[in-house]
Amino acid sequence: MRKQFAITDNVKRFVAAVNAVVDAQPGIDRFVLVYGPVGLGKTETALWWKNTQSPQSAFVRIKKAMSVRWLLEEIVAELGEIPLRRTSDLFHQAVEALVGTDRALILDEVDYVADKTTLIETLRDLGDMTGSPIVLLGMPWAEEKLKKYTALKRRISQLARFEGLTRKDVAAVLAQICEVALDDSAVEAIVAANKITTVAQLYRWAAMAERIARTRKLEIVTGADLAA
Image (cartoon, rainbow, N blue to C red):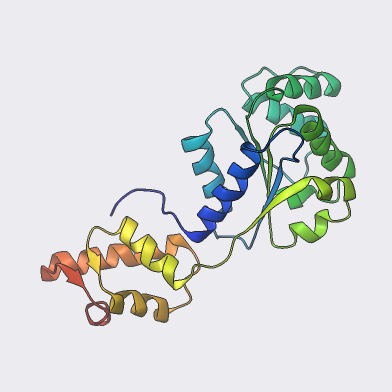
């Protein structure tokens, strides 16, 4: 099996939304909200984008118990600086590390702290003072939860919703990760077997197809081969 990151429609939506704010002209709001059910690869996609397209950017996973100071400490550390002690100094450290750059700040699990007004407003302040892309990752209800922050909502210029894999996604992912060919009947059999929603599920099917191909010396695996 090929050990590579699989490109799906969700990934394409993420890349389009984030690249749109990275490439935005001055004066354009640069907040992105990426949301959808757990298990669809939001975090993995964000890390893939950071590692392959923007390694200078920062990824921080928000924790339920986070205070403003704790969050700023993690942001500053991810930006490659040694965190100072006072909250005000931490904030200015983060601003100085981001301002004038296209370094994105990616914040995972943002809906964990959607009820913490001071923390959410601190993120808005960072975006306003640096002009940097701010990417917020959350669950399906993140958009609704963040609506009460009118000033922040106005700054979200791009949305990317993650959804379960389509048949097109299933075929594309299998072609990318599986080292044997699967015909249309095999793809249909996999889609019909159970509701495929994540790439992780397809890795198991790809492993099965490769095992069947080796055992039976097949060049192409069909739906009948998978069912046998």
